[in-house]
Image (cartoon, rainbow, N blue to C red; front, side):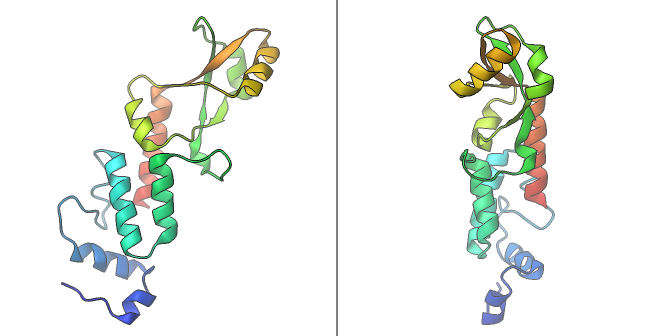
Length: 167
C-alpha cells in the first residue's frame, strides 16, 4: 500500500499520481487506468465511482463534471456541446411535425444519466417551455405539444458521455 507524501499531494493532478491511486485501491468495482468500470455496464454507477475517485484525489473539476452528468445540468449553466440532440416535434394527437425538425431540431438534453438510462429503450418525450411551444406552433401553423428524443439519440449521448469519462 502506498503512503502519500507532500510531493504526491502537490502532484495530485498528475497522471502518475492518478494511476498510483488506482493501483492502491484494488476492489473489482473500482475504476482503473484502462477505463474498466466505465466502458461497460451502468454509466450511472461508473460516474458515481469516478466522482468518488476524483474527490478523493483532489480533482474538483472532474468530480463536478461527473455529478453534473449523473444528475443533469441546470438550464442556466454551460453544458458540453455533445449534450445537444435532435428532437422530433409532435402535436397533441401524437403526430410528428417533420417541418420543424430541420430549422429547430437542435435541443439541449440536460437530463442526468440516471434519467437517460431509464429511457434508452423508447426514447424521451420532453415538455418544452410554453414560450417555445407557442413560437413553434406559429412557425408551423399547428399546435405543438412537445418534442421526442429518439432511443438512438439517447444511445449516442450516453456513448459520448462514456467516452468523455474514459478520457
